Length: 237
Image (cartoon, rainbow, N blue to C red; front, side, top):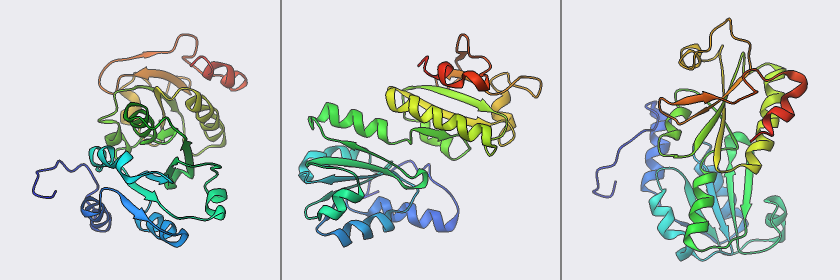
């Protein structure tokens, strides 16, 4: 990229590959000067990367971090925008940095302080959605994240019970951004689930804490998260 060899961990399908390459040659920080420019930027960015928009934020404040995390997110600053846009993105003062995960329909807002340490902490924590659904593609996104992973293994990601559990996990994740919360369905990825000594004979869901590599341990008292006690089990975090 720009004459510098860069590792590529994105998709290999032609249409997605083109979208990823467009991102890599785009400006490090896009400057948006109207509501329509903001909408067009978000539409062009798509759903494969998180999007950061600095409303009323000087480009120089995030430029260094935008370069550092260019492979992982879109970055922009909005110079001119209406009250309607503030209402749409649910912020009530500036400067504000809004993080969007379009594929998860999630957003969060950071009002500072905008010193680099605090800003980078927010950006790093916001590169992933509140609760990550683990599959072969999303697993790659954990590669550079050093946080411990609270992984919940469910029987089937698509059943009603699992979706209710994910809502509780999101609440826990909001209060514990120093951890990554994730889930995987035994039905969806059996081989991965079995690497944590989970089999068809094990009662699910089961929660473990994983270092993202080979080490993991079960959370004491929550080897099996009971339906009637899911909330209290999860609040252990």
